[in-house]
Length: 248
Image (cartoon, rainbow, N blue to C red; front, top):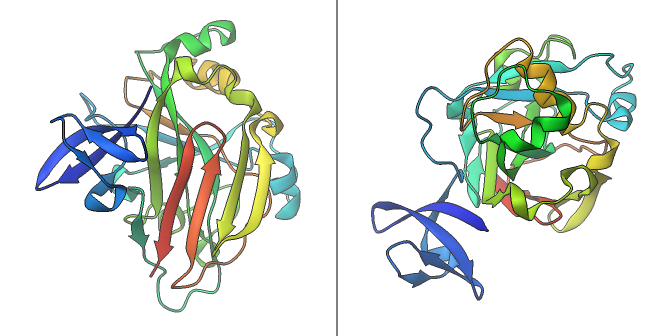
């Protein structure tokens, strides 16, 4: 199953796709345009940890002229960076290069501590799509993204759907692509990650506790381009949906 979270007539509701429309959990059937889309996440019982990978595709590391990392390059994000499908993201005035990053996102389903790689999928509730914008002007260096690069408000669209793990039999073989104003500018496959999802669950849980609702953004392949005000960016992952965002 796949689910969305939306606001309709002032209420926050869960929704499912039904014949090209949204079936709300109050039984109303409405169009995609009739709602405000939220990140498709249930409220977490504690502050949500958002872990994000950098340079997790060798081709992207090469694109940026960096050696592929030998262990995960990870940074933390605040939840205020998240926004929903069909929402707006602001490009700061005066910046020279702001780009999208289409990323498979793992949603943790139960408390995970010292999980073995072969058991990792048992701890995943589902998946969604992230577009983790980066503003290169503010980058200190590729191994230490500072807060203004990755933690600005509403710079990480998430959605449109929460897709249950059972409906994604192999998350490590999903095609992904990004388009800017309808033109394909990025294409790749999750099989090309340097550190795959089971590895990451084992790695993180070896030294920290993962809890229900925590997120792992798994990085992006090469093909990032500068995005300007007015550009409509669609980041899409096979089986998970197409996430639309507009730059203002």
